[in-house]
Length: 211
Image (cartoon, rainbow, N blue to C red; front, side):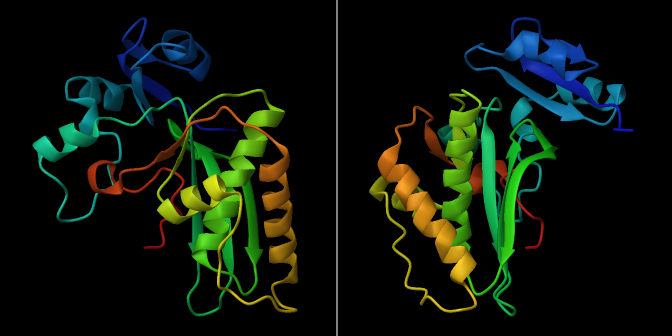
């Protein structure tokens, strides 16, 4: 049975604490500048609401995190969005990707892999295209976050500019790359593709946590 989650809403139609996503959604969906996050308990929500939301959005920031002035420069991420990330094992060469709702990183909405003999850039690209396809299939116009500038540039170019050689080992991976390129060339999308500012917000919610 899934664990109970609570939602703290700093900015929305009705700021406060909600005991389920449906109630929270009514407060934040379509609300410009909505700020909210899920927590494991009602008490955690109470504590969070006494503090600025920036302290809780991206809580895995590493040493050397930016000053308050630098955080202000980047602002706060749009929580009603999708976040995607890729992971690549430098020793084995296996790679994979996953996508989550930014406000609820515990719920994976899609994934791919692991695939042999790939690169991080390739799976970041595949994850981003998968998110676009997912949104099209579900009639969603949500923003999509990635921390990969390379993946963003490949999607805009409608081409994966990888130098990874094709081989028998990565045949499955490159079949997906070719399909992704074909999809981009054959489809239009309305979803904003946004850069996740790791320096200000911490690791992207879809992060595999292997750093």
